[in-house]
Image (cartoon, rainbow, N blue to C red; front, side, top):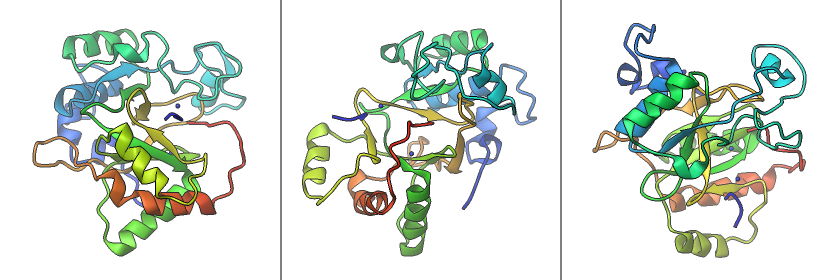
Length: 247
């Protein structure tokens, strides 16, 4: 199973959860914006989180993240890292938690660490696809009135967040498709996604569609089957260059 590890633009501070994610003044007196975002995801949305590796602080990836140039170098120091900065490193993904004390400690020690969410279980799942295909898919959903949940974007990938699904359910849905391109990736049990306002070794992560509260106060998430056909069709129609992921 693959890692299974994609028109409106809203920064974190303008989404419907903004008042709870920060102090309201924009100054974040109780921690960094990244810590505020991590606490919102962990304690209010009940999504397990863990710090991402981030770009190497003394490498060209750090300079690129500050507006410089040069290839990104991940803090994991692997020159072949396919997702520089945008993956768990230390602690590992299995350490992801919703416990607020642990979340505060992590981001107090690494206030700029990317925000990684462990997918699957009862939290959130996602599908990621090339940005061009993602933008076309979102336009189709909007034109036909299909309700979307949160969508995360980088310059190269869109990640469409969906309600958790079982591996058996995913298998049945994919079996019904004529072709599922390798550029469409599924983030379920054992997977992860990176949330805004993270900055990775390639670029800043942003909301293409901001989270909207559901009845429980957590972000509303659509069912996988309501979106899959269009996401597959647009991914098939988008040439896969075979380049390394920059997400």
